Length: 404
Image (cartoon, rainbow, N blue to C red; front, top):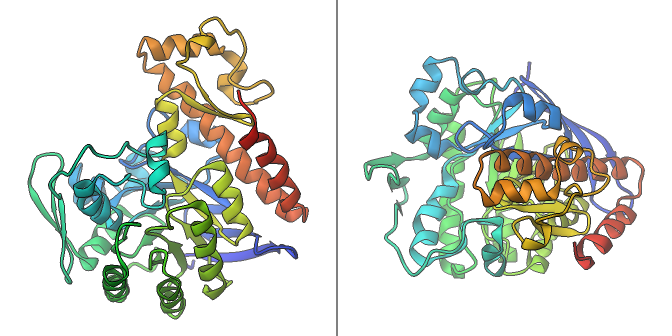
């Protein structure tokens, strides 16, 4: 079979929103879809059976981290990433390009670790808190590739487009990403152009290096918040024989900047291939991006929030460690159908967090993923029913204005 097929099920008459189906060797993904992040071949605290019960369709794993530990060669010897982690559904691996940013410029300058996250938002919990002051780079970029200093043991590793593709082919994910150089909102126009041109050269090298016919390659659109660069990159990637597109790097300094970048970029990407917005996962951002024609998302926010006791509800985020919940007998959110809300109270969950019991991570993660996955499923249904705008307005009116 083909590495990937994409069928549009419905397109909105009122916006760029669309619903579709992606078919890859390990199954199908109904879009729009949220990819759950399993950086080190695991979604923290959950099993593959948990993911299936939640309705997870596709999992994203991290090329850089898995190449360091346990190593792509070992994973390949043990049957590939699907077999290794016990997940038989669709898998995507990033390229290691994100670590070019997070272990290089971001670490040195204390920028919030989520590339797509705006600096003012980074400290709110969606990504690791900004570094305190400047720290030494662990990634150094040149035209041929990137030299990494391992955060585990200080050893030196080299990642080039060819090596990134080799690692991802050994891991065996259904979808792989081209190696790129993301930039931040702090990079100026000249450096952003330099990184863009490097990303384009690397994309062609990735295409030349790819040999597995059962893996789909996505190219990554870069260009920061500069319209001409975004449009140039979108046209470049659209002209390549790749199976899909990812939009990455800096999405500007505000949500309005992100919306504008999508409005510049998406119309230039071929309609017959899926579009993946990298690193974005806040509920309001998901809905705004779906309305602008995005099909796929990934973000660590739902699971990372959960591990810090921050839970999603339709009335905004709730911080379970607050003392007000010490004797609260109710669920995280009344009416929620997740297994956590069906069985456990806010008081019990707060106790678990205060006592630093590991069960707290698992139960909170189940709830947050249930919330986000349900949101995206409902958005898909709203597209099919031609009422996405009404659904988005109703959800956001309550989510952004209410207090738990």
